[in-house]
Amino acid sequence: MTDHNRKRVVVTGVGAITPIGNTADEYWEGLLSGRNGIDYITAFDASSHDCRIAGEVKNFDPHEYLDRKEAKRMDRFSQFAVAAAKQALADSRLVINELNAEQVGVIIGSGVGGLKVMEDQQTIYLNRGPDRCSPFMIPMMIANMAAGLTAIHTGAKGPNNCTVTACAAGSNAIGDAFRLVQNGYAQAMICGGAEAAITPLGVAGFAAARALSTRNDDPAHACRPFDRDRDGFVMGEGAGVLILEELQHALSRGARIYAEIIGYGMTCDAYHMTSPVPGGEGASRAIQLAIKDAGITPEQVSYINAHGTSTAANDTTETAAIKRALGDHAYKIAVSSTKSMTGHLLGGSGGIEAVATVLATAHDQIPPTINIENLDPDCDLDYVPHASRAQTVQVALSNSFGFGGHNVTLAFRKYV
Image (cartoon, rainbow, N blue to C red):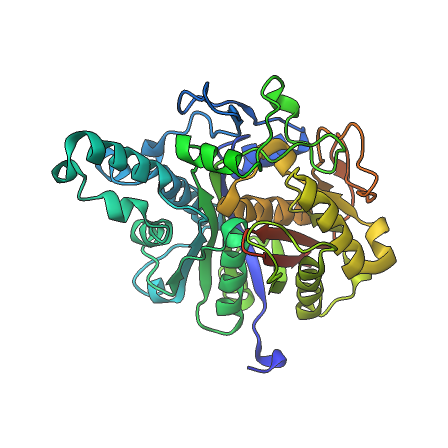
């Protein structure tokens, strides 16, 4: 399809379940106020773990969105996805009915899927034998079920998919959904990411890889992207969902438009299972491809929501990638990591961070990076430390990078 036949795509709804708020409004208010969502793990006894802290979702009641029987047959990550999707649909005022159901699709990414269900059923299998495993174990566990269940609970019969690209999954989901609407395969897409991997095995696995912070005596300050004294990421959980809609379709029904999605770049480092390529060449190409796809210049970018994990490798590499992609303009834009407040939602991170990027564009407010006390000398950009900033945002990028070398950048523009 030639560029002039590509349809314009806008964001008309947002939903979020996060460690700092269980609606998009609460989440956004939490970001702007620099709220910390990281504390001691309560989901299980973590006393024997090297890492005993995480960004847990608090006071989430799945029965606000699902009846008890349905909720019981869903892993937590799917509950989060359906909840955030229902929020986003309500926010967009998009009604799915028999007339349009086949033109509304779902793509929701997850890096891990139903880890809690798998662990619980393994325990039952070992202690009580194979006959006692739940018949719902497999459909509760598999990663695509967030997308499948979201369709079931919203009636969306259009394109349906699940991206599983580790910590880039949520952003890949949004980018792929953007392409489907842009090229006429759907009028609207429900898209984002969901994760609930704060489990004994999930925490143990990442800790064994030496990826997690062990600042157990000070959870509020454990996630410190771009800070010299960072010592690893902090796991988070939740879901972030956008409603993407073809522009004319949105205008015809009088929808409120938050922003326009204009670019999508994805690459692979082809370098290492868990480490980014030194110098950030792969991440830089993803940023450049998103800018090229958007038809803009680096000088038009106002804000980057960084992947910003608070690991030694990511923060310096991402900084290098931004400078490589944007040149001297890198020093003139605001860059912040909202993970400093939420922790790292793995496959869900691209979802909630796209919500943050869209709202920054809509409201001309840039969320801060909290916990920067001593800036890493190799991290020399404007990371919006400590407090949010009122600043016009014309174009914003959101970066997500995942194990396996997956790099994704999404580009959003203010809709006028």
